[in-house]
Length: 425
Figure 1 (cartoon, rainbow, N blue to C red):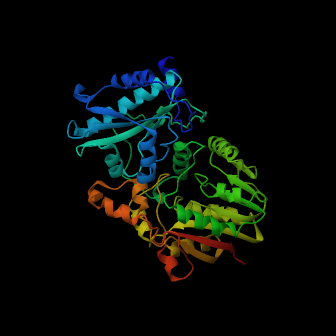
Figure 2 (cartoon, rainbow, N blue to C red):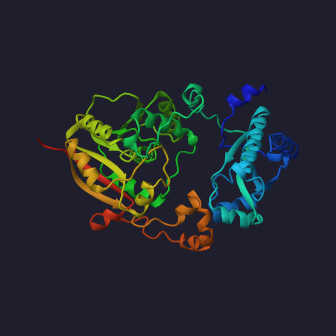
Figure 3 (cartoon, rainbow, N blue to C red):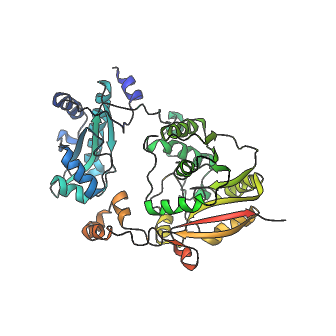
């Protein structure tokens, strides 16, 4: 296969046939990786082939995803003591893995390059990796059992500049960004997981409780606006096959991605569109949206949706609460997913709703204290590694992650959901 064809056709594969590749083929793939540029040509990296028993242990004890689904799984490790200037040792690993993935594709083998793999400290213990060595990433290899859509890529003209960087200092908050740039980033980010996998939520119990709450407020005809991942409306549509869902998305590319995801989930009651319809709806869903939009655009969109609401229609919107433990971290850049996001106070949300001529009838809070399990999903920061075993012990309990509050404590909850109606003027 010619080089350009391999580069443009390669995809991240997450669904493999139950067929392992031969040792000879594996060695050929690794040999292709070794041909990549290496800092000072020292090649201080190595590979660990993981068997099924170890895969199971990594999944159970370290939260490793995709382990058991990967017929051939390699851990790529390196000695972090050498060639660390300007991350040269890590850049070397990047060249190695890319070579391997491209060569694998050229001979009909699928690959998944994984940099997120759960509790790193526990992974190192399981694989008996020395203290001064590091796990850079994992590479799953096998015969593909899926054909993912081509992800959206930026044009070279968007990212090529001459002699100097044109960007001005910009705060990482929605009000500092143009809406089209926020849409563009979210539109590309949706491909971060294939349609067969979908998006994983940081707090699974919180998500479950939120969906249960929203489920009680749905009508026969529902519309959802610009939810970046389908994290909420897909489960809601699955639970309510007798109800209809119209999903407004930002582009034709996202529409195709969502349609493929719906087909995989066997959901037939969702219609996807890039245009805002003129119909009337029983319930309007503003999910995973309030924290991502500039306030001015958010108010304008809420005003637009108000005209689509029937007299007794409800609007459901969730937001990350500024006064929660997670919300405070969120404002400082922790765990942002689709570009600039900022946690909001209940007062700010009330003011936005009032400006859009909406009246909040109810506000409920979810997840008072997040479980330490979050650390093993996003990684324990280096300076807190000594606390790892204590965090892991605490993670056996969900604390108050699954809690729901309607009174004072809702003001301290990670997530809030409002139920709003049209103001009578």
